[in-house]
Amino acid sequence: MNSDPNGFGQMPGTEPSAPGTPEAHHAPAKTRIVEALMKLASDRPWVDIEIVDIAQEAGVTLSEMRDLFPSKGAILDGYTRMIDKKVIEGIGTDLAGEPARERIFDVVMRRLDAMMPHREALRRISMALRRDTLSMIALNRSGLNSARYMLAAAGVPTEGPLGFVKLQGFVVMLSRVMETWFDDEDETAARTMAKLDEELGRGERFMERAEDVRRFTAPLRAIGQALMDGRGRMRRSYRSRDEREAGETTDPAGAI
Figure 1: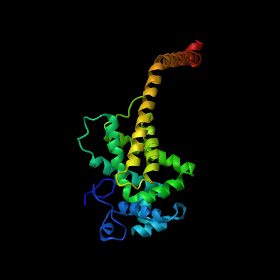
Figure 2: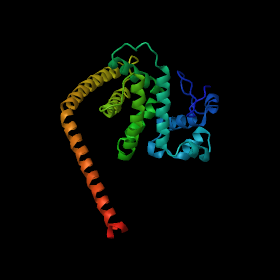
Figure 3: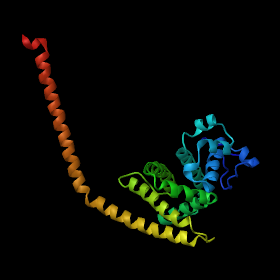
Figure 4: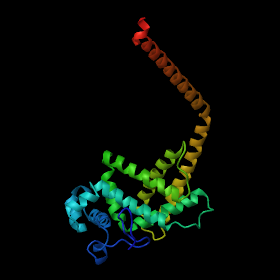
C-alpha cells in the first residue's frame, strides 16, 4: 500500500475496504476511522453515532483516535481530503486543451464516482447536518479548501479579486449537484450530468456578471483606495508632528 504523508493509505483507483475485512485491518488508522464513520452513518442517525462507536468499528483505541481526529466533523474533513487526493491522482492530461467548463465537469464527475461507495452515508449525513448552522459553517470551510484543489486540478486559477467567488461558487454548485446525485439511480447518471451542466452554465453567467461589476467599479475602487492612502498619510503626518512637539516639551534642553 502506498504511503501517504496525511496518513491515508487508500490506493488510488481502488474501492475502499469494508471495516472488518483483512484489507481494512491492515489499512492506516486514519483510513479505518473514516471508513468506520461512513459505515455507521449509512444505517444509523448521525446524532446517535458516538466517538466510542467509531473507535470500536475502526479497531482503534480512544487514545489513538483522539490523536488523529478530535471530532466527527474532523473525520468528515478527513474524508473530504481522501476524496480530494483520489480525484487529483486520477487527473490526466487528456483534457488540457478543453474549455474550463469541460475540465470542471470532468473533475466533478470523478469526485462523484469516488464518493459512490458512500453515497447513502453522505445522503444521511447531509440531511442531518443541514439543520445545524454551526456544522454547515464548518463544512463550508472544509468545502472551500477542497474547492481550491479541485479547481486547481481542473486548471482554473483561484487567486485574484474573484478567487473567493469561484471557490464559494464551486461549493454551492457541488452541493446542488449532489442533491440530484443522491437520488439518481440511472447507471449513466444522466440526471446528475444534466444538473451539473445546468449549474456550470449558471456559474459561467454569474462569473461574467461579477467580472463586469468588477470592471465597472474599478475606477470607484481606485478613488476609494487613493482616499484611504491620503488619510493614512495625513494621520502619519499628524502623528509625526505630535511626536516632535512632545519631544520638544520633554527635552530638558528645551527649558534652557
